[in-house]
Amino acid sequence: MTESHPKRRAFAMQKPKKTSRRDEPKRTERQRAADARRRAERHAAGNVRVSGPKTPEKRMAPKAPGEVRITNLIVDELARALAVILKFDGPADVLMKLFFKSNPKLGMRDRGLIAEGIYYALRRYASLRAAMRPVRPERAPRLAALATLARQHGLDAISPSAIGPEAGPLKNVLAFRAEDASPHVRSELPQWLFDLIEAQYEDANLLYPAMMEGAPLDLRVNLLKADRESVLETLHADGVEAYPTPYSPDGIRLPTKPGLTRWPVYKEGLVDVQDEGSQLIARLLGARRREMVCDFCAGAGGKTLAVGALMRSTGSLYAFDVNEKRLAGMAPRMRRAGLTNVHPAAIRSEQDPRVKRLRGKFDRVLVDAPCTGTGTLRRNPDLKWRLSPEELERINAIQKSVLENAAKLVKAGGRLVYATCSLLKRENQDVVEAFLAAHPDWQLVPAKDVFAEQRIVFPESQWERFGAYMQLLPHVNNTDGFFAAVLERSGKAERAKPVKQAAAEESAE
Ligand SMILES: C[S@@+](CC[C@H](N)C(=O)[O-])C[C@H]1O[C@@H](n2cnc3c(N)ncnc32)[C@H](O)[C@@H]1O
Image (cartoon, rainbow, N blue to C red; front, side, top):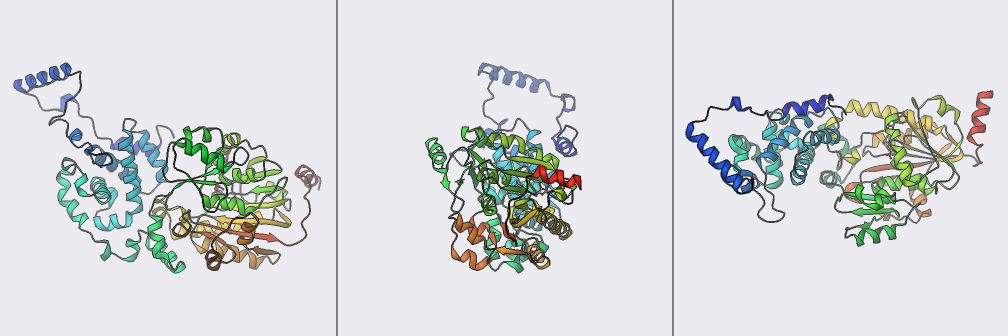
């Protein structure tokens, strides 16, 4: 993003105005003498500003380790961030990055508290908005920041000087009782999304709080370079708390989020960051050495890298995406991972001539379809406020068209995995069932069987509930919400012609 990015300007414009000396009221003779005396005292004390009435924030510093003290600075800066982010006209993670970039002088502790405050406000925006009604939180960002921080840490944690004249309105906002609010507000969801989830999940009351929690940090061990045990040993030797993930054989879970990108295990490509659910989708594809495989919606290559490692960097792994910029992010990750079998290619649409040329050539195709991302609300809580039924409709049409066209790439006897990180049946089971109804030469393969071949075992209740599909849920599996279906094209599997030969035949026709 450049300096002229509109959002960056939005943050810049809201920076508290610096008052020039000319704006200050004239100081009297006595006041100027007192100023000079104070300056001399500070100079004598090594130029360190000693605590006193001029440094209220120092008085509010934590008295005990872990004790939270909310200073005026934190309230001001959180208000500045919320004024922009709560408009929901851009992804919150991008806006947060811009915000912190515009604030290079903020200390680590303050950054942490502000970031947590932003996430808290996004996760609980429905009740924040209801409590502040009729004022919209983004229109009264200081009150929104104070209310968020008070709900998070308790009113006593906030410096009284930071509350100031907002004390009255804040008291009213905090008097709001969630128990009296409507069910969608209590679940912190927009009404339309609440209705869909409520109709679909009998245990939705457990799903709502799970979606409001933070997610753990999952790593995938790169099997080309390491195994899980040795990486766990390295992490433990460095004093990092880390556990094997319960289902994925290559996964490691960290309850805390240390500065991972600085570690040798990350820099040398022994691990990558990937939610356990994503790792399992790559496993479901079941790609083998020397096969022809296509990742149709590869993005920046999260699942491509996992599939490539399972293929031991042999065969050919085509990585398609309509977003060239996102696809470009894959190259450094591939290098770090030591993968040489990946061929990234930007396509114009799912009907690109390149896609047409490759019809019937692939052993396996992964369709990690664009979706609402409702399974990732733990990490992206702003999504629920930026989505709409119209957007769901639009994405749903793309999903069907992408599946329809990607399926044409699969050869007889080959497989396709359709996956999303959505919780909604409309984007998942409904898409797959419509496809199967229109294509009698395709069958559903039970995910349980594919996992069993790789000794990945779920409790039986998982399959009783979701049948042949893989459906992961934060409150059941402690992963993001993921869906996947394994589909097989009937017919005898035969070895595909090499791609170059197929392309030559195509152009000769
Ligand atoms: C869920 S994301 C993929 C994430 C990626 N597989 C990963 O594991 O990191 C969906 C991707 O589909 C891409 N996409 C959207 N429409 C598409 C289309 N018509 N054909 C191919 N890819 C498409 C988007 O650009 C986006 O990168």
